[in-house]
Image (cartoon, protein in one colour):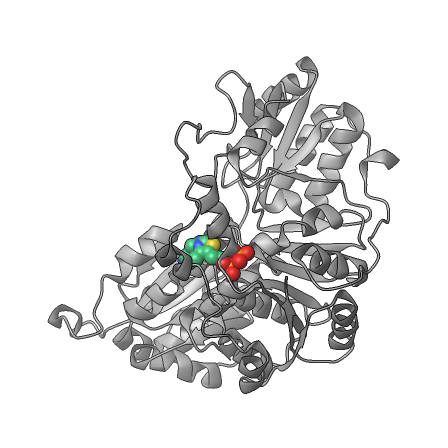
Length: 515
Ligand SMILES: Cc1ncc(C[n+]2csc(CCOP(=O)(O)OP(=O)(O)O)c2C)c(N)n1
């Protein structure tokens, strides 16, 4: 067995089954080991951002890491933007990156780069392997670190991947969250008991069904409102789940919402701050005199922390009927498509168990408020605001949940960053329906310019937020990569095409021409 095979064997033993890759010469032994030590399925992405975004989607669905295999510093750098979203979503994810052979590193060859410096900006755990004997243990350490909900990056010199290894045991990862902190739970219980109007701000794993159940128990007894960040990574939603209010994107309405609370209990996320800093507006969304308490650390499980808080407060297991969503959905609207009508149409026909990957940016603003009473589904958002995440993330979500339909609400500008993800969707035959929100501009930037008082927008800036000229032919582009595609401009056509796409295996793209 060589070092690369030892890595694959360790990965398999840890339970890793999928690797999103775009490799090169320095990772050759690892690529060969997919055959000689089978068990981890490699999936080719035609750009590293597709690989890292897909690994993010996989990790969000399973709470287990998918692996990536990337080429040196430049390959890793191409993936960083979508690792950023994964980091913000607290996704478990494990990168393997090849390094030049040890006797070549100091020669400053063309592809040489400081990989550790790159890895350090994004990874909760990273290391360059120092000896082939330690490869298995390094991998197991990387795996364990990722399970806390962070990125691990293991950099492996090419000669160590090739080196023959005998008499080394395959390391078995041992993972456990730290126990919850009784003092902060007591502090939170006191805040809830002593204040009239308390918000429970939850994120990360707390938005999975067990966390939501604990939050709903607390709300049933104490009436706390349940809030989450504007861009939560992953959320179970719909009938039977409690309503979670998203903190608005712009700071004024966000502060208005939060100022209504006497105190805030935070679990699975951190104190809320605005997306951007604006002149004369505080970046912190809570005021200094609002009491707050955070009930978990990064190494404690927020689900356990919430469940423990529910017990401490004496909440019953039963949830009040008023706390969870009842079935409620809009009708398919009529007429030409607008962003509002596109969201209504999706909400009207979205099937049970759908995984909604929301990168609709400004076109998706109306969707969330329509989705509370839909059939149970999963919502995934672009947690770090690094656009181009939707198409790759859908790949990982579909690979992790092959029996569930993935619907990617995708803004046209964002889609263009990683459009080659469609090729991987077709190659793998994934059940993904991509709904392109074709407003043909960077609309959110137009809104931000207006907010900044820059109206009318000058011709040069105007041309920098217009993506219509030349016209992007979505159906041709999708078809060129093997994805069936159609363009629609009325709500009725959209409803018909979504239903058709969902009833047929494989990926589909629907261009929604928005007025
Ligand atoms: C990686 C990255 N590059 C650039 C940006 C800046 N940015 C934010 S939104 C946006 C345009 C979004 O346009 P589109 O996806 O078409 O959505 P719309 O605003 O039209 O709703 C850009 C360029 C970003 N957030 N992330």
